[in-house]
Length: 175
Ligand SMILES: [Zn+2]
Image 1 (cartoon, rainbow, N blue to C red):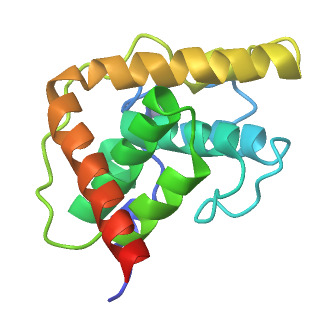
Image 2 (image 1 turned 120 degrees about the horizontal axis):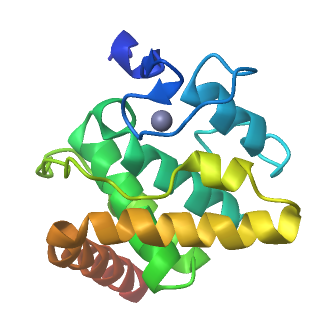
């Protein structure tokens, strides 16, 4: 299936403000995506599609995606991947076993819920403004928790998906 080109285009800025997440993007970046990427590389991450093995990076990627759902979560599968990932990062300490179970469980045909208009007070800019690595890590958690709270209306649905993934994983283990 050809990739939807709209998913590759960064959300437009209005003045310096990202129209999807509301972050004020510093003048040295042309988009919120560039700001995101500038932080991703030092975090040890070069391929956005494979943020495995590092729960902090995974949390960072999932929080960013859920604040930019029109593009990053365009399909129902990508929506489910990022919001269940966010749930795992916040409520299950970024369990690698759970991320793996979710990865195996994700499938097409899931519903694509609508996103809330308000998707959190904090943005990727909050992470960018951190003084050092330790503060940055703390801020990634704060930001991700803020985004997760903004999706409160979806928590029950998402927790149900996580349980389905864990059950499917347990069944697989019995064979
Ligand atoms: Zn943005």
